[in-house]
Length: 250
Image 1 (cartoon, rainbow, N blue to C red):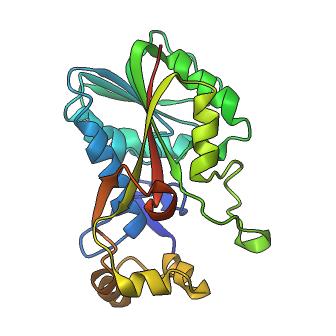
Image 2 (cartoon, rainbow, N blue to C red; image 1 turned 90 degrees about the horizontal axis):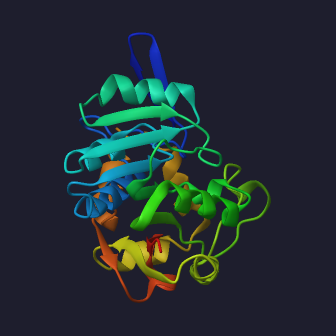
């Protein structure tokens, strides 16, 4: 179920691709997972200049700015950038409307973050080249993407995604670009037998259409343990919800 935030004639909608932070009394498993990834990366940004590519509603850029020297968030949608500027203004945080596939910064950054965006580009190789051009030699790029274990077809396929990848496909394309990279995964913190069984059922994906404030969603979250995550280094292909690559720029 889409959620919206309205503020002084400015509205922005959670489309399922552009994620909004939760309000009090709401639960969003996707937001919680994405927020967790930003919080993990936060420990790498101390005193660094950072670019957040595909910043969406800006909450991730805000998390990074709490420890980084400077953060620039870019997104191609004007309403998203207006929302970011309204809700996450800070002295060391700026938001720019820009096409990530063509954006050329005035100066390179120490670190680039690109979470849940690479799958939106048809030419992944060219997009990786662009990310590398944004970062100083010796810098780092953090890239996450959904771990696609099974390709969806027809109406089940995500209409926003052009380049969904499995673990092996993601590793293969990174090997063509980086001499050094570490592949991690964002996974549920604890195994849950009921979740494992239900995840194989067709109706499991229907949860995205339930309102964030729904009591059913809160009960399901507790029963299936859907809001606690960890970073894993083994069993990524089978266990990771999202793949997280830490790439070193030569």
